[in-house]
Image: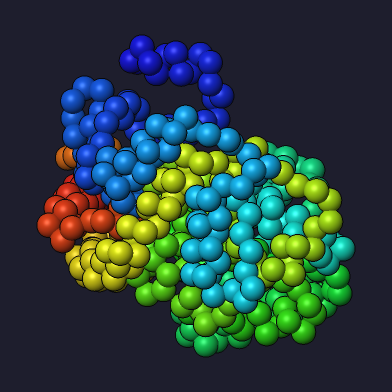
Length: 431
Ligand code: PLP
């Protein structure tokens, strides 16, 4: 065990997840690659943890942050007028498509979702929330309460009354083989049943990830959330889209993950990629909803000058370089390269993706059951070959790839070749 790992184990919680048998220390990054303490360089197909959507050491972001630091960093809090904060809010409000949108900044996705829950429960005077099975929304008391997988929550006590819907994760025995239309109908029937039997009429909101992130990039058929929204509207129930992983053009087809569903949510939450590594998150919501809170509020670090400088530069870069189109262009190359594995290798259960968000399910070649050990083996195999990827899913058996949106075609093909090689090797050993 390395000295740093021993020190980590001694002072940090045992439940803090660490990748790899011998966890690595990343010490620097440039372009879409990072270097570890032993001088090994890796192509990063997980963009940090979907945080570095422009990769590393991006001049525009570095210089914006350095300019802000050179001014003395200046006041942190929402008690003073901060130009960068207002400018960023204007951009996000405009991009959101939400009518009369207003923005509140936080430091993380967890706080963003916590704020959205506060807005919805206060607006509706209800502590009842609909969430999705297998969802992940953060690590606070409220967001753990709505997280829909017991593997990611400890508390049996909940500040909210939560009911879970089928939907994003369609790989359940009851739904297998259904057409998209039949599946959406079944999910809507499930929603109506939940509302009729368990929670009607005073439900605050539905909160959902358009593509489940930690849940293994599980995808609902396009249009599901529009179908849900029709039912929600009948009851005045609000809809919050958690865009922490799916925002900023990552899925290629839309700027927000929910865009593919043809519906505008009442609020969206965001974080991760926005600061390209600097801590920033937030909520963009209908103005009446945002202004509906009556108690005075402040955020000490939310939207602080350094994070908003990074975020403004990052967002401008995404828009100026049309990185959404880059995701739309490279996504199919990666998917087409991986899809044949699902037919030829028994250890590959499924391949799916949208833009630069794609996944491979590893399964037991004999039984077809989720195989977390095989996913872990692929992670080791890719690391040995100089590629970082993510892992997740209900059983920890899904390889998750979300490279920086700045990925080049050559890098895409390089990462793809490594993935195919590592997966093929693990399949051969498992057969
Ligand atoms: N929502 C989603 C969809 C996430 O994937 C995450 C983190 O992985 C969160 C919320 C929580 O964000 P954070 O870790 O910044 O608190």
